[in-house]
Image 1 (cartoon, rainbow, N blue to C red):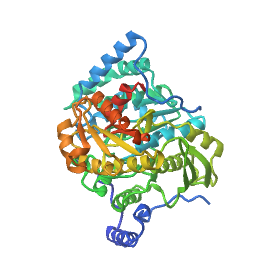
Image 2: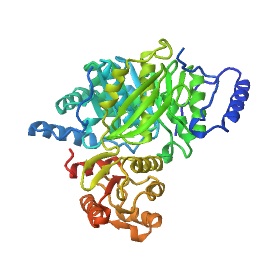
Image 3: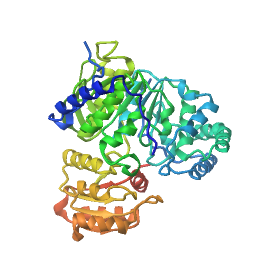
Image 4: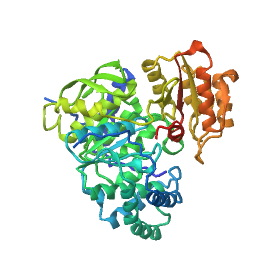
Length: 507
């Protein structure tokens, strides 16, 4: 895999000596706060809100639905998101023939392992609350491909999605003909998003990386703010086997002169990110130092937060999402928007607190500890790696207090399913293993073999069909009056969650 190598600073010997001395001093700190001081500059402070749940149904008009399905089939005929050729050559060529629409607006670029989409939605809500027209590009989708491109907090209308595709298709064909490989599914969607944002036009774009950073198709933007959510192990076959190795690719979104907002990171990932910031003269704001969570209390339907931003303190913030991880996402989103507005660098003040409160109170994040049924309670969570599993397990225990929890797990091949199941084992009394309809799905029997090793055979049930798995889990949750407080957690993959959401009548 090709790696972008940042320019080396002058006098590397002296730089490395100083850097390693700082690293050595920092490794004795709490890992959650172990951010590496690498001589970089740091930030120190001396339009409407999104509506609905962001998951659109199929178009009601049969002709529109037919046209949308035709576009979906054409996109699906391209390289999928898991087949990659690490290069931005093709997307750069497409941007060139489209007239570089990605340069028509400022942007906030988000990478990391977990929490990217929720953080993007929070950033979008904050920008919209301050009367900016927003475009948001996230992946993957829960139910409809149109979710990936949002304008003003709402998924792009199917008609506009189709129109945007038809508008850029001649240029896509032109690039396809000139390149060794055709543009991929993700590259075409990225081109559509950037074109749609320019046509709107938007005041700001919030863009989530698909995978990695340096060679990701989204990385043709020069974002003024780069956000790095927590880095952990995922896509290790493509990105690296340690957080530090994975951070090398993700650091590629940090552009010269930008501001990089860092969530709490493992030490080796922080080291890479801070070195990148030094190399490109980026300004750094770090969770736990320049900004952070002051207090957090569980509340009905979510949590109540006091957050310390780059400009000061924001109290009485209600966030209608569950889990400590969402509180961390919230403070990262807050710092990113402050940095976008120049708070902490140009302005030593807080943003309007009431506007911030209204924005956070409006946030939705479908498929992230989302309750879709009661009696018994069924919760959907798109966690798919060990770190996500641990966050979901902790949040479930904190927010719901189930007397007995039944897991429904459908995973994708190539994931660390053992680590994921081990994260769930302490909170799930039993697990029903299944598979979703994706061609990337891990077979139910293969998943069951691992689940039996983790849970034991008497705690594992196999139901290859997802509808049967949901019915079995609900039956297990209801079967004994002793367990009146039982619940069901559906997890393991965004695709599994999206399909369960449809089966349960949520979308």
